[in-house]
Amino acid sequence: MTYFAYDVRSIKNFIFESLEFKSIIGASYLVRKFDERIKEDIGKIDSIECIYTGGGTGIFKMKDRNKKSEVERIFLETKEKFFKDHDVVYTFVDEDEVKESSKDDFENLDGMDEIGNFAKLYSKVAFKLNVEKEKFRESQEKLLENVCPLCGEREATETLRRPSEGAIQVCPLCKMKYDAFYERHENEKGKSTQLSDYAESKSSSNNRDSESTSGYLGIVYCDGNSLGNIYKEFKTAEDFKTFSDALDKFVGEWVEKIVENNDFLAPILGGDDILIFGKPSKLIEAIRNFNDYLKQKRADVSNELTFSIGAAVIPMTLPLRFIFDVVTDLQKETKKLRHRLSEEVGKEKSSFIAFRYLNSFDLEPVNVEKCLKFGAGMKLEDFLSLYQKIEKYAKDKKVKRSTIQKIYDAILGETIDEDINIYGAKIAVMYFLSREENELSYKDIEDISQDILKLSKSEEYEKEKLEVFPIFMELFSYYEDFLKEGESK
Ligand SMILES: [Zn+2]
Image 1 (tube, helix red, strand yellow):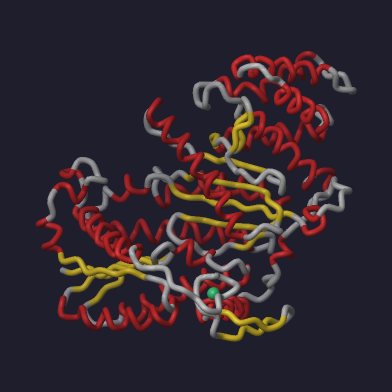
Image 2 (tube, protein in one colour; image 1 turned 180 degrees about the vertical axis):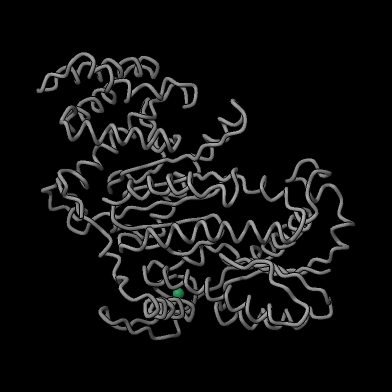
């Protein structure tokens, strides 16, 4: 038996290479169409069986190894149609190769004997695809005469006529992505073609700065944790297929539900990756919905399935590529925290999230200011219950934004060393809460201080840094700016 597999090299670059929103959505549509076409055209060759295609990757089982050249020809033709010069690597793996492999080939999977047969094969496939990807990296940078303004990567040789913004010269790939956007749009009537339709201004703001007029976007990026641990159990191609199909269904159904009301858009990233961007006022609702959905449906995929989530509210004037990088950085923080907890307390079965509400003066997603750490990860359940409390405090007017601001200023105003700063922060929290106009009871003050400071005392979070107060502060501002007094749209 021989296997054929392919993988789009850095699919996120392919999708986010262009700064234009339509090209981004169009690019993700091209990936989907490519997978569908390959599945159909290679899958219909006699004696070849498609195991899986999706998210720019695919794997096929070939009973007849003489079909290699036919597969290769179809693959390369189709690749040219959908990706032009963007690299899509492919490889063939014979079962014999896997038998001859040394233990070192499976170094990323521990306990060779316990690894299922298909897991070994799959690991070999991944290894060979990576070797192909490495080759590409060595290629030289090209000198361009007339650089495409959308991607800055290729020669602009095509004329792109845009309905409202006029014509420009772009590269063939950007034009193809743009056309794909409109093709997708034709098939999905009722979806907006303007990113600005998804942006929202702050409801509480009376500033006329550019952010309050052009608005903010909410963005959520979810990525499955340690799928390798699930893969290594696979004994047959059928195990892999069942899992991949279930995961696709899990992701697909949720995304479909979340984009239904036109509050969000979802470029397709594939596999366990989910990216949505849209109305800030719907962001936390979407995250809560994801948490509920995960609890309900996880068992259909695997009980081991958990996610790392980066979420942010960001001025829409920034390039989408940057916005995506912000949530990617936040997601990395959650992975770090998860790793730390797994080392300390063993297997971790929670999902994690890191959240930021950024403005154009503060664009560092993960940032330490004195004893405050911005962009820290926390358990998804903790995050949602913290938000619920903040919502309540804001509604009951138990805490005012100005009080939070005063606490923040007091903490940063300290010039002494960091340990004392945390202590100082605690005093500041108690002090400013006790001075609230509506005179909080001592119990209220204690409860609220706990919500701000409690979690950071726990072993789970980074010691010597207040990680929850920045989240509290930004969630509070987020609530006031986008959800206060039923002003959500
Ligand atoms: Zn281009």
